[in-house]
Image (cartoon, rainbow, N blue to C red; front, side, top):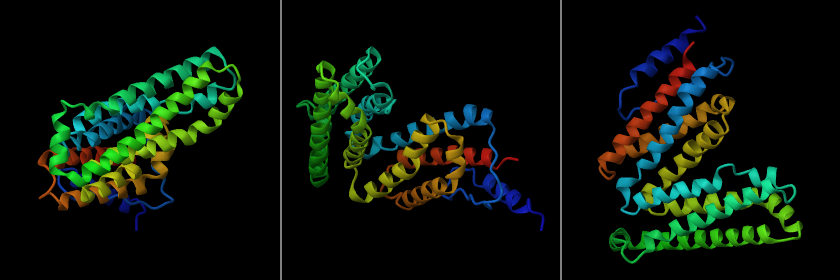
Length: 280
C-alpha cells in the first residue's frame, strides 16, 4: 500500500468534517510520519487562530450565568498577574530598579484584581441576586471560592508590598523562589472560582477542556511560542476538544443556542489548524 494513502484519506475526511456540525475532527497519524508546519504558518495563521479560540471559549460562558459578563472583565485583570509570570524569578536576583519596577507592576495588578473581584458583590448588583435566587447551592459554592481566592490575593499583595519597602534582601530571595508555586496556587483557585458558577453537570466538561486544551495551548503555544509543543501533543489536544464538543452537543436541550453556536465556531477554527498540520 502506498504509505501516503492513509494520510491523504485522512485529509479528505477532515475536509468533509469542516462544516459546523457535531461530528469530531478525526485526527490520527503514524508516529513515524512527521507533521509539517512552517514558521510562517505558525506565526501568521496558527497563533492568531489559537488566540481566537481562547477568546471564543470564554464567550461560551456569557449565556450560562448572569454573573459571567462581569467575571470575564475581571479575567483580564487576573491575566495582568499571570503574564510574564516568571519575571520576579528571573529579574529579582537582587533589589535593583528593574526588580522594584517588576514587583510594583505585580503589586498593582494584584490590587486591581482584588478590587474587580468584589465588584459582583456590590449592593446594586442585580445579577448576583438573580443568581442566588435561581441557584442557591451553586451560589454558596461560588461565595466560598470567591472568599478563598480573595484572601490569597490580599495576602500575596501584602507580602509583595512588604518586600518593596524592606531593606533586608532575604525576603526578596525567598519570594523569588516561592513565586512560581504561589502563582500556580492562585491560578488553580481562580479556576475553581470561575467554574463554580456553572451547574455541576456543566462544570465538569468545561473545566476539563480548559485544563487539557485551552490552557496548555494558551500557555505553551501562544505565550511560549512553542511549535513543537503543538506538534508533539496534537493527539491529546484533539481528543480533549472532541470529547468536550461531543459531550455538550448531546446536551443541547440544556445549553443555550448561543453557547452551542460558539462551540461550533471554535471547532471550525481547530479543524483549520489541523489542516495546516496535515498539509504536505
